Length: 402
Ligand SMILES: Nc1ncnc2c1ncn2[C@@H]1O[C@H](COP(=O)(O)OP(=O)(O)O)[C@@H](O)[C@H]1O
Ligand SMILES: [Mg+2]
Image 1 (spheres, helix red, strand yellow):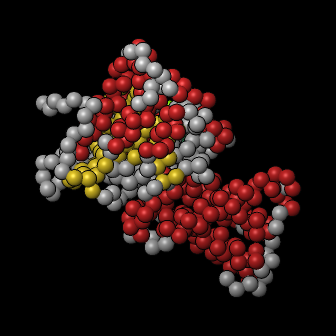
Image 2 (spheres, rainbow, N blue to C red):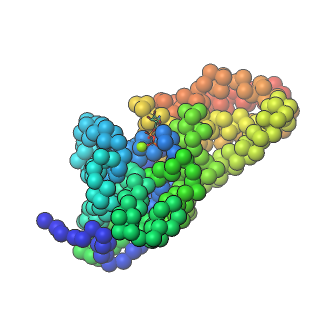
Image 3 (tube, rainbow, N blue to C red):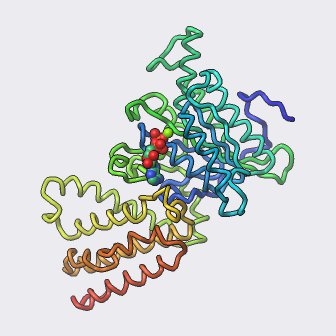
């Protein structure tokens, strides 16, 4: 048996640089807003935007050795479902049942508030305990807002002077100290043993207002922010991660990992991001003048952005294949889409009408949108081939060099 005061971080020899991504199998995260092993991330979002589903997706599919899942002040039935589902699910990497690598801390909404406060620290301490044995540990906390509310309650009972929205003055410090316990370290036990603890916390801002204290303080301390968007969730674009409001500070650290899969990963990612950003500006104009009135180049950007959204960013957690996407497949899908844009741009610049491009079977019949539902890489490669063939046929008709 080990005893340790949970509010005190367990010691280590030294902190070392983070070097590899925590792969989650979720495309919008791994490709656009990655988290490193030993890093921190927060997923803020209003009610029903997908915090719990996303965290449970991480718990199932992320490539950590050990997963700690803290249900903190949220609905008990969700926790019960997870507890009954995990013994059935298999870890795709080891073939073992997922439950064998998982620790659940159930501290659901009807339990005492003080216990809620302790559950976060208990989780992080168990995480450090496995880290010290040289494992890569990933901790998910749903939701850190309930923990902050518990702090507020306790502070109220102690008659401490509240600051913003009733929270005590030390809220920021507590949140910071919690996320600081993440990291990649050389362990105390051996010079040669390296372990990591990644911390991923849900934040539940009342009314989806991101300027409230817990969300704004948390954003300051984390390396990655996945901002969930009520409007996207309403349109059933899941995961409802807003690509304009989210960020990752780990891009440079994970580049090498992706470089081994595709030398162009960084450029593909950047180009796709640029298309999405430009499209959001063009959409404003399109709403006033109508899509058809836009210059052809801009209409192409809208089409490319639509394909990025529907074929890549959207990912159905409940679809047998789509629920998890290998890094190799992510890059290859992204490559098809960006390559499509590059080729189509040359056509459009040579006066090929965008409406003809849109009518090509690989788009019209949905092949490019179905890449995510087909297992393996064969179908993606087939779509890539078809896309190139159909575009070059069109190029020939218009006597354009592709
Ligand atoms: N990746 C996803 N794929 C499919 N559906 C999703 C996904 N994420 C969220 N949803 C849908 O959104 C609903 C609400 O998600 P949930 O995680 O419970 O929200 P929150 O925890 O933020 O209140 C889910 O029941 C599900 O129908
Ligand atoms: Mg939830």
